[in-house]
Length: 401
Image 1 (cartoon, rainbow, N blue to C red):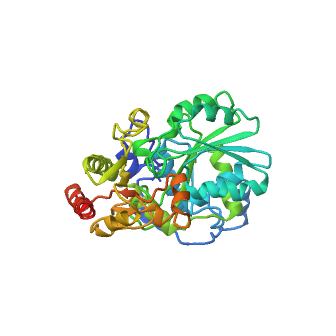
Image 2 (tube, rainbow, N blue to C red):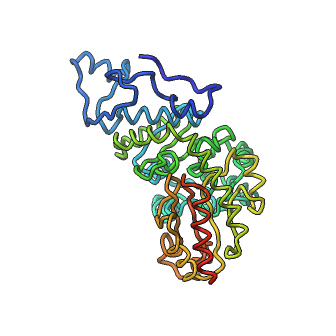
Image 3 (cartoon, rainbow, N blue to C red):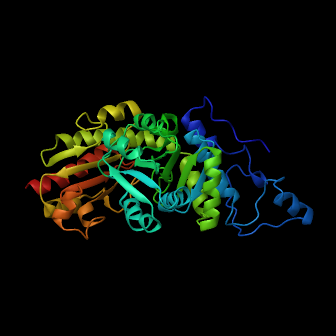
């Protein structure tokens, strides 16, 4: 069977469609079949012995590997220009497996202050129980990062790029330069909102790239998955940890991910184009107090974004000129943008963090962490830009009157 193609010098669209896959799969199938089995049969004891001795590459048991899952992993690695990738049932399972596998009691981890709230929760409530310390630093506070990284027990630096919801952009190359003084520290970058189309952190000095494949990589709001990409030795250790912890992804989800990845380049170009157009529209609307989008010169990290990203994505955060109730009325008046908890797919989704992810907090508590009552996160889908601006415009106009 023809080996998977090398991504060197190939366009990202070619890698998305062809990368990590042979020209034909089993039974002469063009697309990767769903291999739905929990166990694999051996022809005889000789074949089993060869496998156990490491002299043959084949599957043994579903918790340790699956051909459909492996094809998705090879495609992810090709897209990130990584040596290897390992797939998980969710992004959260990917990050918790990584932290538990790479840290030990007495270690210290540095996180940017606006990483995913569940990751912060895991650091505070689980890692501390194992004697693992953590520090939070602002995405652009490199002095604080340098101090935290210099601690002799620091082992990991973890950040999103861009972050959610304010789309902050730490300069990964600058962080990598700081970490070169402390080679014990590994850099983990969650590039979910960027995707390999807009940003490949390994090329800027990161050691591991994290993705919630549920978002842009799958792209159709129909799967849950997470992935880690990096060098072969590190990913192999994380794959061993996955087998130990039992976080094996389902082959059906892996199949959907492979299908989604094939159109990633095409989709992201439209997300980039539509996101920038709608961010500019919102910034000019009188019912908007402020827009956060790295493609706008008003964004605090626009300079870093312009240098680090090749596109700015389709996620926009903004403050409505009004209170909690006015912001809710605006969202309720939207007819195309759908109220939903996720983001980064073909359908445009909108949410008010004060009523969803941070509803258990008071207004004052939410404001203290930036989850203002009038904050809205918009994930621009693939609908027509004119239709979306008309929809957003009429909803905004309604709260002004």
